[in-house]
Image 1: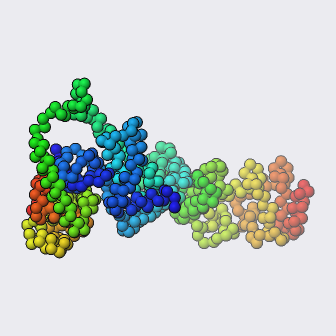
Image 2: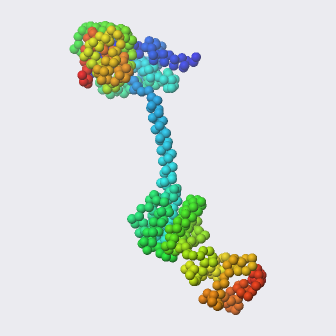
Image 3: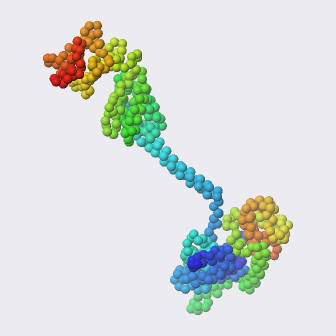
Length: 311
Length: 240
């Protein structure tokens, strides 16, 4: 048992010296100086706190600042890069869901049907831009035979706001256009995933017509034939596109500057299609009196229209 | 000046001055007794260990108090209560042991202790105690010449074993070089440069525990045979 010598006495405490040379303050249990004691009640002392130096505060300040910095930027990184902010559902026949972060980079790719899973097999698009992934997926789809001439690519965009939807839609359309230029003709459809509404236009990605540009070149025949016959561009019947081209006339103030000389059924300019049915009379009467189609008629097209209305 | 402010001033004075500390404890004895009575649920007697514990707890409160801790007396009361609780739990572990102070039989004057032969020669012990006291008084007065008091040493004593060993290394080196001890006694200053170089102990450690090292060196200069005899384990763990 450790013994202590009482070195000094005070009313409140005594000073003890132990065998190892340590000095203590202890409760004065009626001790006297010079006495040897064995089981004193030592005073508890707070562990000496080293004064916190300037360095300490500098370091802790730095650590706190770093923590704030990390928290702030970590959170913003998380928000910007790791959380799915929008999605694009690509469907050719394979259907693929692309989850995008705020930066428009792909964070997850899921095949939503069997072909979609087949398309994604062995492909890693994580972290790439949506445009790159779209291009690569389209290439894969072509290689795997999912997409061919005349096919359709549909992008259903699930974006939290309209601005982003517009932005992504334009970007994807432009990109696919460019990517498949001179390669094949496909129809690109942009759909708003939320409202389910298809975007107003369906774009045909076509190789650029060689030679002439403009409407005069839009012909279904001869060397300028663009391969697409606009049979459906009619103002009548079930294929009526809702836009009546009243103004498509070669005469008067509404003359569009393009004289359709070639649109005749006769002579050397005969287009090979005899519009037998295009008659204003009898059972085949289409309800539109084509006054303007008479090449002898000099009268103003406005008048013709008036007559139409009268009918 | 409010009482609360006055006592804080007294406490801060007592932190620096041993006499002021003693005086403050004596002045607040009624308070200390009343706090002890709250714990004991009876008035404490002079010989109660609890009262002694309450007194050293009050002293501890003086040492550790800072005005950021609130009112001093509340802090002191809390410290006293904590120390008495510590003591109570420590004692409870020995509750199965019979007290030697218990009276035996019907006669209350005789206690169990009185019936035991402790094998010690009481007269010899008393002589030894007197001799020790003389030595301590001599040491204390010599320490005073060096500007060091026992209270200073108690407060300056290393708390960590590592530091204690470092201080003992300094002592060991000084003992091996008696001329250093002579120089120390003459100049009444620690030969800091030689001690640092010779003992391989960091200068800052020596400076921080200067008062303790002064006391150690003085004990090992001349005389003080009894104290030195008591410090039998002092060189434990020191590699010369």
